[in-house]
Length: 92
Image (cartoon, rainbow, N blue to C red; front, side, top):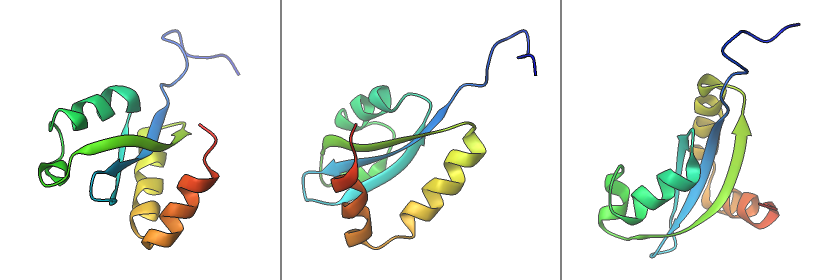
C-alpha cells in the first residue's frame, strides 16, 4: 500500500516521568523529550507544581494519537508497583 503524499503518520508516545517525591506522571506527546523539558520548567502539567520533574523514565511509541491515548488510560489505571515494573523493564 502506498503512503499518502504527505508521508507516514507521525507516531505518538506514552511516557512516564519520575517526580522528585517519587511519584510517576503519565502523559502522551508527539515529542516526549520536548515535553519532559517543559515539565522540568513547570509548564504543561499542574502535577509538577508540588514536586519537580526529575527524569523521563519510560517511553513507548504508538502509531496514532488515539492509540497513545488508549494506552495512557491503561497505564494510569495501573497501581504504582505495576508502573514501577514498566520502568524497570524499559530499555530506552
